[in-house]
Image (cartoon, rainbow, N blue to C red; front, top):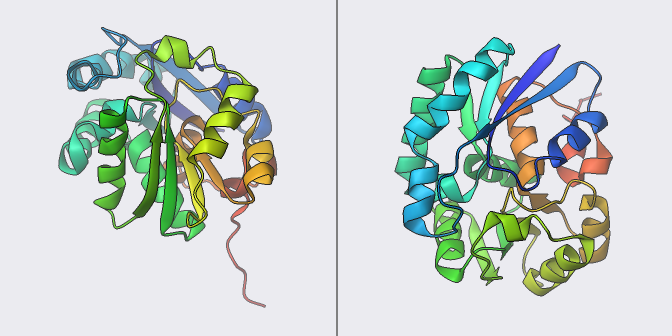
Length: 243
């Protein structure tokens, strides 16, 4: 049994995780612990507090007791808001506190982009524009070319969590760019797990969503690779076997 641990801020789209677990192998368990988010606001000061070491450490003991093999901070904005170096320090501290491999959704996006072998991406963010631009800067720090950033200006994760397929598809279409090889939707408060194949079919390219890449990152840390086409192109990248 591979047990994946996730620290998820508050309550918005956490039901994506049991849905994803059902689509993975029966020997993979997804354990979710909710962290205290403080103020629910896509605002830099609030996000820095949300991702602070103390708030993350509070949920680690429960994941340890559950026997998690790896832990991922399931929050994009609460990680990239620290910048590249600060986000690295955040996951280093989390790994030391948890005593297991650790990462965050922001680094999950970086690693997933590499996995797909793409360089040019578009971003469709629910956040206000200043926060969305910080995500673009984070990706650029790893050499990813961001060709377009479209933001929806939503302040709270609670509001994002009310969005359904229609709103999601409209945002994806608005955010897509003809030069982008993939579209990134970075908010873990956004329900996406049930809609990734439809998004990819509509846009004709890979779509990376926050909860999808977060679980994929947990699998990567645990050295597991799962083929699950219902979770999009990212979950169909099997190693090439030479004949």
